Structures are given as structure tokens and as C-alpha cells.
Image (cartoon, rainbow, N blue to C red; front, side, top):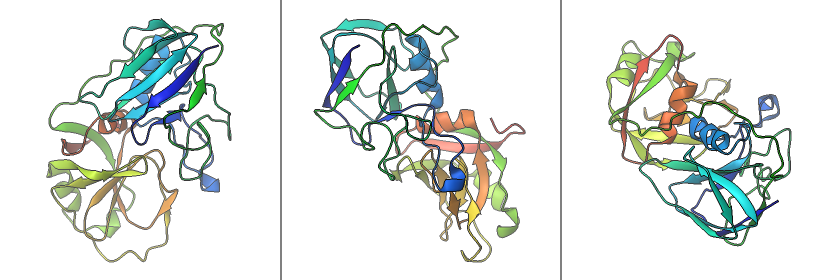
Length: 275
């Protein structure tokens, strides 16, 4: 087995597997990758199960020292065999990247997952973001290799188009609110993290105030705040919320959203399947 020794890590870098399903009732969000497509692509490229634990690298760059023999891929690119060397994952036009190693990143399983949930302080590497000096163990190199088509990780167009389903709280919006939401070209705010991303360049009208009982929330829900600002919930989202939800972003479009850096433009389109 090899090791990854962190030399430089960007703020917010974590270990993420496919996520922690089935715990919303206990107040625990799923976590998992911001961009599930790129995460799966990196794992498949090195022969892992696409759900295996890998390094999530927001904005970048990440610099690690390889100890031992390790087979690595970034975002599904051609895998490389490395031995006792230095690896730098540079920044790209996409807002998040993934470094996978054959055998997976070997951190403890907590509630059925290796995903990091920083707010709760568990999962991943000691329940926190990565920093210089951290030593990450790599799973067994003898692990059977999985084969499968590697998804394409493409750069979104400008503006990106995200598919949504209409949300469950339309009675809390006036006529025309959904049309305004769909017709507006939004920009990714600088105020965003794994909990949620705010959108700039417009507002959505609402009816009433925020005194409705808290409602269950899911990843991709688009909440509209008191002042009309949309917030798209991410993998570490709160499990309930008081703001009304005007739309829900589909799984494939959640990955597209994750690739957009601050100031990038996007718009929404209704789709029957919510893709």
C-alpha cells in the first residue's frame, strides 16, 4: 500500500466517496462529491468502484508527495503509475477536481461512508479539511480492478443550462415567479460552499414571510430567501429549511453547477425528468 502526503492543499479540500445515504431523518446530510460525474470518472480510470473515496479539490492547486507505488487519475484522465514522487493537480477552468488512487483513499467508514462532513466533524480524514502534513493511506493495490465506461468531464458552456423540476412550494410565490426564475441569467456568487451556492443578478418575488414550518430539504433544492435571492443546496445541505423551494436541480445538472467558478453565468430550464 502507498501513501499520499499532503504538501499544499487549497481551502476546502476533503476526502469524499459517493456519500452517506439514509441519514436525513437523523439530521445528517448525504455529503459526497460536488461533481459526482468527475468523481466517478477519476475512480473508474484507476479501476475503482465509482463510489470509492477520492480527494475533492476545490479551485486548487493540490500538491502531494507519493510514497510507494500508486496508480492515479485526475478527473478520469489517463491514469499514471507513480512511485515515490511529487504530484501537483493544477487549477483548471472548472471549480472542482478529483484525484483518485487505485484502492481508494483508506479512511475510516462512519455511518456507512468515508465522506467528510466538516460541520459534524466526522468522516474523511479526521472529520476535517486537508492541510499540509496530512498522511493519507491508500487502499490495497491488489484490489480487483473494476471496468466501465469513463464519463466525460466537460467544461460547461456560457451560460450553463441547468435542468430543474418545479419545486413543492409554488403556493408561496406569486404568479410569474417561476417564469422570472427561468428567464433570468444568473451569476454564481462568491458566497458559496458545500452547503449551498448563492446566485446573483436578480431576485424572485415571494408571498408572505418565513414563518412557515420547516420543511424537509434535499440536495439541489433552490431556496428563495426573504430578499428574493436563490440558494442552490449542495451535498452538505441542512436537512430542513424555512425558505420556500421554487425548483429542484437534477442530478446531472448538479455536477455542471459544481464546475462553475464564481461569476460564471447560468440559467435554468424545466425538464420532465429533472436531469
